[in-house]
Length: 202
Image: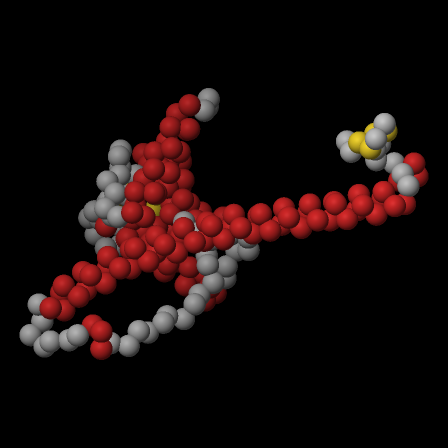
C-alpha cells in the first residue's frame, strides 16, 4: 500500500487526485518494464551459460580430431580449414530438454528401462505441438543421437539385443559416470531427481 503524508493510498481511483494517479501509473509501468528486463537478463544468463558449456565441449572435440589428424600420413594444418556453419534447426525442447525427458522416462519405467520409441513418444508429449511427417522423423533421429551420446558418456546404458528385430532398449544405471562437463551437470540433475523421488511419498 502506497502512503502519502498523513494518508494511505487505498487503490480506489475516485478518491485519488489526478496528479497522483499519473505518478502511480508511471511508477507501475516503469516497475513492469524493469521486471521485464530482469526476466530477459535471467534468460540471457542461462543462454550464456549453455553456450559456454557448448564451446568447452566443442573445443574438447576439436582437440581430439586434431590429434587424430596428426596421425594421418597426409599433413593438414587445421588453421587452413574453412569453418562450415551448420544450418540452424529449431530447438526440439528448451536446452537440455531431451536429456531430462529421457531421464524422467527411464526413472518412471519398469526396471528403469525403456525403448527408443517410448522415449521418443515422451519427447513428443513434452512438446507444445506434436510433430508430424518430416518433423517427427527429424526429431526422432535427434533423440536417437542424443541417447547414443548419453550412453557413450556413461549417463545411461544401452542394453544388448539378441537379434536385430528387437527394439533398442536403454537403462538407467545406479550411478551414472560423467565423462564431460555436460554429463556432470546432467548427472547432478539425475541425482537430485532421484533424491526428490525418494523423499516424496507415493
